[in-house]
Image (cartoon, rainbow, N blue to C red):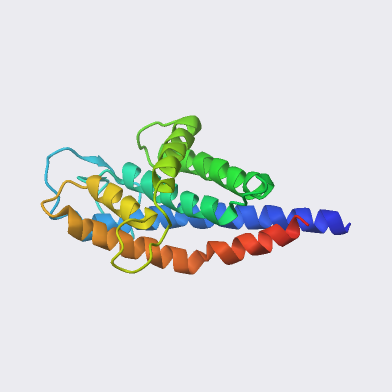
Length: 201
């Protein structure tokens, strides 16, 4: 009975993390779109898959699919780093792997429902893995100071800025970085991972 209770708690933690991650990614795309949509260049339009205003047009000049995917990739990397243990992959396999897979499945369903570009779960996970390697080359997620650009959060912010065609991508990156940092503060992966790890013992 005790073991079943722990399993139920682990499943709830995984579900909560996945739900938060998808909501955070959609909110991230919506926020950047609403901030920079009017100044975005180009004539190509994309399906709008995230908006805080239900009356917003169904299309936008900003590729929200890319923003949602890149946001998810960053937060999954942050989770991966928090779950890393040099002596064993058990924690990462028990927490990161199911969260990443369920998030990719939920994202795929969300895109289908929104009429967005069709994309497979494996394509999403492959992209996440690619970013995980790229972000992993940075010494840390946050850097040694607020001005340290040699860190995963700044790399992710620059990538997000590349998703928007505008004249000043650094401003976009700065906004993306703030959104990333706010999300990390809210989710507190190190503490959540610590609590999850206790459920494995």
